[in-house]
Image (tube, rainbow, N blue to C red; front, side, top):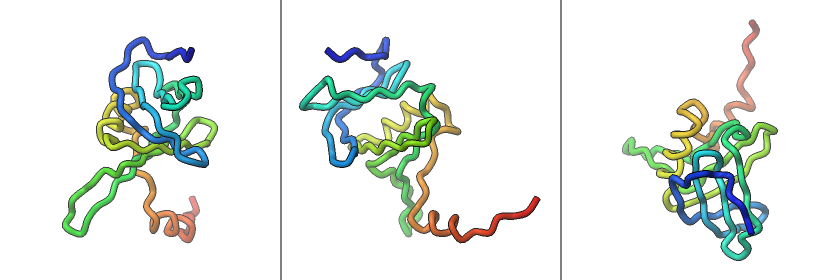
Length: 127
């Protein structure tokens, strides 16, 4: 039986983890960790303690009218640099609960498609 690290669960929703292929399951946000439980096999769970999370990148886009929309996908970047991608219909609420535990400085906007190219060709300033 899978054991949760959390002593209380603040938010639970359905989600998808992208690990080579899509795995459907439940996202559980609690006081100690972010957890994902697979629907088919509960023993195949992923637990990320808040101390191991470096930052969370949310998919945010801006339309031509100036409307800001939160996309369904977000990534958890761990202290060792590895990145795990998730998606949920309620990603805005998920990111708000994550921000509650990590703080505003660790929940950031993911780089856009053009932003990654700008960073590659940007000159570094000398100090």
